[in-house]
Amino acid sequence: MAIEISKNNHIGTLTINRPDSLNAMNREVLLEFINELKKIQSDKDIRVIIITGSGEKAFIAGADIKLMQKMNREEALEFANLGQELANLIEKSAKPVIAAVNGYALGGGCEIALSCHLRIASDNAIFAQPEVKIGLLPGWGGTQRLPRIIGRGLANEIILTGRNVTAKEALDIGLVNRVVPQEELMNTCFDIANAILKNSPNAIAESIKLIRLAAGTKLKKGLSKEAKSFSQLFETEETAEGLTAFVEKRPPKF
Image (cartoon, rainbow, N blue to C red; front, top):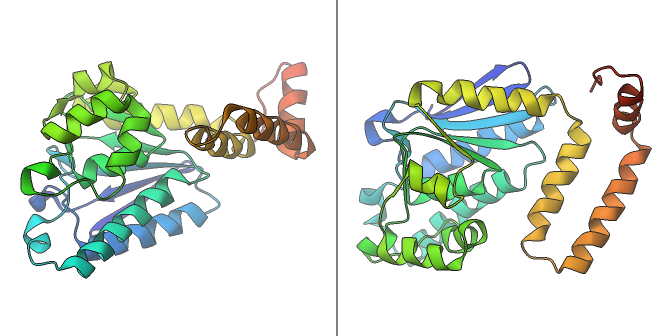
C-alpha cells in the first residue's frame, strides 16, 4: 500500500509511503489516495485529518515524470482530472485537513498542500511549481489556488520561473501557516489538531465552507450566506452546549 492510515484521538493521519521515489504520485497512487481519503472522511470517529509524506526528504515530490513521458493527450487529461479530484476532495472536506510538509512539495505535491486548510512546514521544506521547465503547466489546481493564497503577482513569478521557495519565504508570503524544526513537525500538527478538537464540529464545517466560498463570491452574497449559517447553528445541540458551557464557565462537551 502506498497510502498508510493511522488514527489517534479523533485525528487521522494519511501518509504517502513511497520514500524511494520521494513520494511521487502516479495514477495508481492517486486512485488509492482518493479511496483512502474518502474512507477517512466518512469515519465518524475522525474529526481532523493530517496529510504527510514518509521519510525526511519529501512531502510529495510531484508526479512520476517517467510515466508522464509516455502519456498521450487523453491519458494526460485523465491524470489531471484525477489530481484535481483529489485536491477538490481535500479542499471541500468538512473535516479540517492539515498538510505536514516535511520536505519537497514540488509540482503536484505543492498543489496537494495548497488544497489543505492549513499548511505547517518543516524548516527544510521546499515548495515549487516547476512544470514550465519541462514544457508543462500546473495541472492539479496550482494556477487557480496559488494566486488565491499568495496573490497574482507572486503566483506569476513562482509559476513562470519555476523557482524553489524555501520554508522561510513560504512563511513570509503566506504560503504556509508555520515553520518548525523537522523533529517538531508532527507534534506541532497534533497540537493544532487537538486545539481544533476542542471546538464544535458543526461550526468548524460551516466555517470551512464559508471561507472557501469567499474566494469566488461577491461580498454581499458571502455575508448573506454567513448570516444564514450563523443562525442555523442555533438549532443544533452543539451550539446549545457551547453557549451553556460558556455561561456556566466550564469546557464544552462536543
